[in-house]
Image (cartoon, rainbow, N blue to C red; front, top):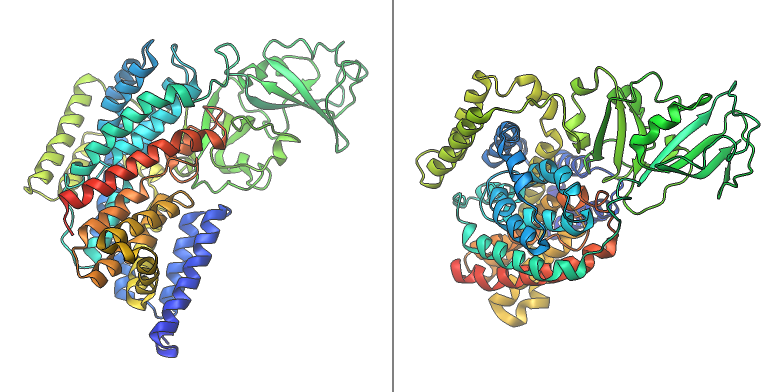
Length: 584
C-alpha cells in the first residue's frame, strides 16, 4: 500500500521532509556511510509505495550513472600514464606563488576532464615531499584548485554528472560536455588568483623540513622473556632513539604519561612512540622488544602508506573491531591524524576518515578487492603497472578524441567511453580483475539512491514545500533572490554533508522554485551544480579536502581561514555569471 494513499499529499510531503531531515542529520554527524544511509532511505521510499518499481530501478541504470561509472573505469588507465609523474615534477619551484600559478594551469585544467579525486591522490605524495615548500603551504591549494577545475566540464566532477542525470530524469534536455565552461573557467581563474594572493598569508607553517615525517603513533611491546625487564627506560636506550620519542607507557590497563627515564620496564608493557614510523624497524631490532601481535610475521620492510577514505567500512571502528588483519592481509604499524595527539593502545584507536596509516602488508594484500573503497594510496601500488611513453600518448589522445566527438555531438559520451573501455581491455592496459578490485560500488549506489530520493521529493510535494520556504525568505528580491536562495541552500548543505548528497537534496527544490516562478530551470539547476562543489571551509564536505587534511597537519580553522575568501569569490562569480550565460 502506498503511503500517499493513506495520508493526503500535503501530509506525505511533510513526512518525506522529516525523513530527509533525519538523513541530513545522520550525514552531518558522519557516523554512518553516506551510501548506506541513502540506499536505506531509497528502499524505505520504495517499500512505502512512494516510488514505483520501474522508476526505482531506472534510477540505478540512469545514463548519467552509467556514464560516470565508465568514466571512472577509463580513468584507471589514465592514472597509469606518464603525464602524472611529469606533472608532479613540474608543479613546484622556489616561488610559492609561481607554484600556485602552475597548479591553476595544470591541475585545474586537468581536473576539468579527469577525476579530480584521482588527480589529487596521484599528486599527493609528490606535493607533500616537494623540496621547495612545506606540505601545509601547498596541499590545501592543491585540493581547492582541483575542486575549481572540476567545475569546467560535465565530466570534471561526479556532482555535475549527478545533476545531469537528475535533469534527464525530470524530462529536460541534458547538458553538453562544455556547457559548464562559461562559468567554470572564470571560477578557476578568479579562484586561483585568490589562492595566489592570500594563501602565502593565510596558510600555516606547521613543521620544519627536518621534522615533517615525525608525526606517527607507533606501538611496541616488552616480551615476556625480554632482557629489558627490570631495566629503566634510560638504561634500555629508549630515550635516545633517533627518530622516535617515547610519550606513553601502558601497564595493566593504566596509562603512564609522561614516562620518566627512571621508570623500570615490566613484561607486557606497551610503549607508545611518536615519530617517523619508518623507524619502527629500530624497535624491532632491539632484543626483547617487538611490534604488537596484530603485526605478527608480516614483513615490516614491505611498508605501504595509505589514507582512509570517507567511504571506508573501517571508519569509526578500532583496528580490533574492524578485524583489520584478516580483512586486508595487512597490519597497521603506525597511525597519523594530522596535528591531533593520539593516546592509548594502537589496536583501540577509533579510526577516522583522513587518518594516515603505515601498513605492513602480506602477500595477498594487493589482491584484495576492497582496497579502492577503503584507501587512497600515498605510496605506489604494486598492482598499478605504469604505461610507457607511446602507450600513454595513445591513451591520452584516444580519450581527448572521445571528449571532442562528444562535445560536437558526433557520438554520445557513453558510447565513446564504452569503445575506449573495450580498447583498453583488448590491449591489456586494463584488466577485468583490476576493474573488479577498484569498482566504486559505494558511489554507484549513492548516486542511484540520490536519483530515487530526488524523484520522491518532486512527486510527494516535499520539494514544493521547501521551495515555498525558500521563497518566503528570499522571494522579496524576486527571481534573482530565489536563485540566490537555492544556491545558498546548496552551499550550506555541501559544507555539512557530501557534495553528491547536497546536490540530490537541493535539485528538486531548484526545479520546484523555477516552476513556481515560471522561469527557466537551467540557472537554478546550475546553482545546485556549482553550489554542491563549493566546499572550501571544512575538510569534510569534499573528498580532496579530507585527503590533504592529515598530510598537511592541518587544523579545522585552517580551512575556515583560507576557504572563506575562496568561497566568497567563487559564490560571487557563480551568482553574477550564471544568469548572464543562462538567462531566467
